[in-house]
Length: 85
Image 1 (spheres, rainbow, N blue to C red):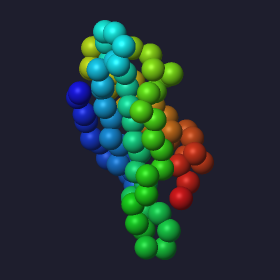
Image 2: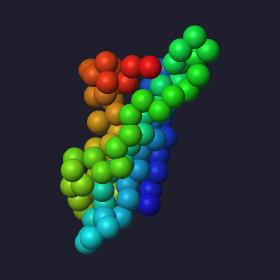
Image 3: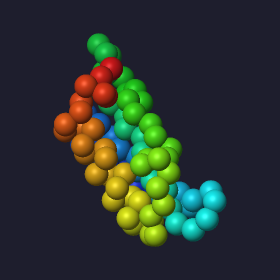
Image 4: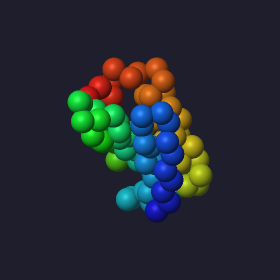
């Protein structure tokens, strides 16, 4: 397993590359936390997918992480309605 964290505005991104459960390669995982929800601006998990791209296997953890981070950026900048509090 390989994990990475990034911040993007009010969002915290947790990306992961997990060994594929059946075979070679790595699957991508992603959690996006909205750190500014509600009147108290409390953090809340806004998105989670433990098997992005329907469990597609990438040959390296770097490629799986890159996909997860790109997916997070698309969610944050183009599909913010999916991350609403």
